[in-house]
Length: 480
Image (spheres, rainbow, N blue to C red):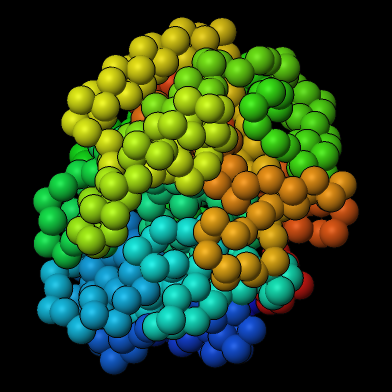
């Protein structure tokens, strides 16, 4: 039975439909796998097994009777612990949030209506605010390729569980790379939709019960295959908005390869892996053209910081925001004297931005989105790095004391994790993550395929063509 967990969700669903395996048997296999790796990974941190088994038995009974079933009927799933599930409210890593009575988040309601069997929650950083997944409530989640390293965040538990066969599908969210970074670090697939394509209601943050569709934040699928991304997106999207097109013909695909930006760091090992991957795509028939940055990235990063700070500042305690407001004079002085765009001064101004400052940043964003859309016209997608380095060792120091280190020993600010993901996030563009190779140390390296607004169908079709013809998911040694 363990062999079936090597399949992607699409093939698992085919096995269920053919009655080669029952929903209850598949759930039990997933639970056995979870128990086998939990001590090493700590990816799934809360469960509701009684409800899940009842649900699986009900699906099996309906299938025996020949009743119509949804597209995910009987598939066991875990859910990122920022989404409310009846009986398992989103904790977002905080004890005070997990004891609430909650309704299903919209995306959870969609997958349940489609027949999925939800049995557990996957770990996240506190309030989804880190590129590592640890909190005082549930502890630290480890990377399945090297347990001394992070799986990424905030969808880190989700990516780790996918990589080792604990779950076949997950739903993540992304405001600062939280879908793309964990997929990149764990060697799986993810899709960041165009903003607004998928409902955020029932996601925490913001505060439980909020009806805010937060700027920049998106909700999207994670999986072990590109076709599974398309399957899950078709279930959770707000109506049939993503075009259902067949896999792309790589011989007709034109890719802009973006690896050079003077203001960004990129580890030589990451660059080498992506260049090798680009050569594989070219050998498969794709036209791969090196490009310059699509827009002036320092300008975009400045606007993105303000837009992001306005969102994240709303989740901070009022006393902390008031303290930061008292530092605005110092922060402006520091920035006028050339402080780094990722410095404490820059973040202070971002978190305390006035509405007038937000509108100015929004105007810059709108102008740059138009420029990027025009830049993209000659290309089907832009292919770019996701993170400046591979998955790094656990580091739970305060943000301001953390540093990232390249393979050749260069150190730089932790917040540089925002750099390569910023184009798609700030400009509300779709981006699909696909595995691209590995570093000399064996850590996964992925790329993001970025398309123009509304082009989710395009980026997913190209990802599926790559997955099925060039390179796809490779399981870590910890897997089956």
